[in-house]
Image (tube, rainbow, N blue to C red; front, side):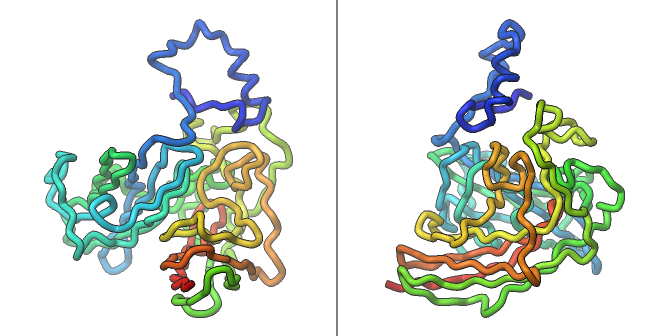
Length: 330
C-alpha cells in the first residue's frame, strides 16, 4: 500500500526518496495515495477484544480521520451513536438505528486528525454471543460504520495493542504480553467549573509500574523508509512510537479550538510528520518526566459550554485515561 506523501509535511529527506523513484513503476490511477488536509470523512475502527476476569469481555474502539489537519465536533446524536444489535442488522448504511437512550457509550465527540486507536472501551457480558456493537459516524455527509463482534481473529492481548501502535519501535518482545499500563491519578474532582478567559489548573501524576517498555530515544531523523516505518514484525505498515512514560491532555468532548493548553501538549494522535510534537514523529525524542512524575498544565476556554478533558498516560504501548468534565460559564 502506498503511503500519503507531502513535501510540506514530511522531512525533505523522505520526499527525496519518493521523488527519486522511477515514475514508470507507478500506475498513478491505481496506486497513488494522496494526503488530504481536509474534506474527507471519519471512519470508526474496531481494534479488537479480550476477556476479563469474571467472564465479561472488553471491546476496544478508535477511529481514523482521513484528514491531516481538519478536526470535527460531532455531538452524541444521529451523526454519532452506538447500537448493540443482532448480526448483520445494520449492514445497510441507510438504516437509521439512532436511539437517544442508548446512543452514548463513552465515545468521543471531538475528533483529532488521523489515527486515534484504542480510544475507548465497551464491556459486554459473557453471553454476548454473536451480537454486534455498531458505531455510526456521519461526517461531510458520509455515513461510516464499524461492526465490533467477538470474532476469534480479533482477540488480542497487550502485545497486539503494542504492535498496532508501533510501541517500543515495533518490538515483538514477549514481555509485552503482560505489560502493565501506566498508573494515573488526577488531582481534584472529575467535575470542575471555570470561567471564560480564566486559566484552570490541571495536575496529574503517572508512573509505569513495570518500566516496560523501557524508555529509549532515537536521536536523529530516519534515513530511509525502513527506519521510518516499523519493520519489527508488523509488516512495515505501522509507524513506530518512542517507548517511555508520557502524559498529555486532550479535549475528548467539546470544541477543542476553544480550549488552549499551557504548555502546549504533546499530541496523543498518530502524527507521523517530522518534528510534529508527537511520540510517532521522528526523531522520537520524548521529554523527561517532570519531578515527582507530576505533570502540571493550565487550560483556558474562550467560549462557554461543557468540555470533557482527558489525561492520557502512556508507556508507548498501552494507555490509561482519566476524564475531567468542565462546565465553562461566561
